[in-house]
Image (tube, rainbow, N blue to C red; front, side, top):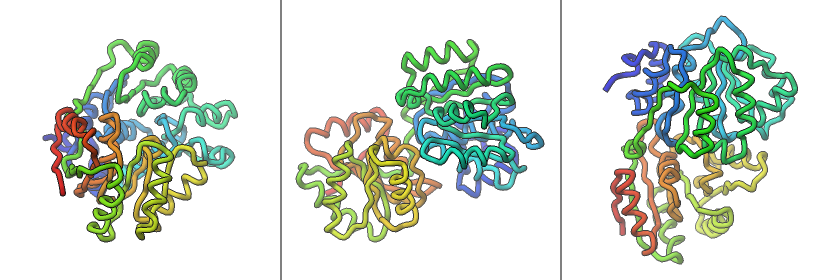
Length: 370
């Protein structure tokens, strides 16, 4: 397998990657980087969360920035506040030993006045949610006339969240000398229409096979039990893990609340994250969890998008998700930075076929534990 250096990534960036324990390119990085690095081309990548997309577009994006010019040259659009902040944080980490490139993140939920002040400083890469970016454009607080590269990260999720009009506006405002790199887990009609309207007909297309998207450092386990036995089995598992920290995924907002309350009397400090919380509440909860004030984070799939917490040893599925990509996204919260982790599913007899399906379609192996 080629190294990042062999893919054309500069030595200063390779040094930063090595410090992050990113030593070998993932498949999407291996294939996407040569397609876009140093090239003026549109690009379409079909890849799920957890495949290494941020480095796949982030390294070529940074390499194309002229550090001597203070204006915005690259824009990354992301569907959620959490993902946008995660992307900007990664871009910052990549440049630790490289020539200084200034990046900012702007998204809903943060005070817009502070963002306007921040954008008065030199900014060469802007990571944003579409709605907030257009708010700033309307206030004439951001200049997109020098943008060379526009990245759409998780484009299908942005459409689901109703950002189509804002994305179209951003693409029209940057039209001219820029190229678009679009990443999407799925290719629904809305995405295909966007591609036909805004991207070049000869834009290279890369699709990452689902069988390659699950981190090989994750051990997949399951426990057979009834619905009423799940709490007890999870308590037993947590006791065995000592002080290790992790996530518990539930399907609905109410499930997270109920399970958090049920877990509390057993002595496990936990916080609950779901989509109905105000942004200030979400921020407070994530700060508590990241600082280690709570051992367990109980969350839903939607609320967990973009969560990036170091040192998580396990993920527990109180209920299995309905979509394969959600299983990949959930389990990918553990075993990061070269470490190992456990993904544990609590299944009833109705879920046995779902385990078989995940094994078959994601090319993973589950081990039953007593």
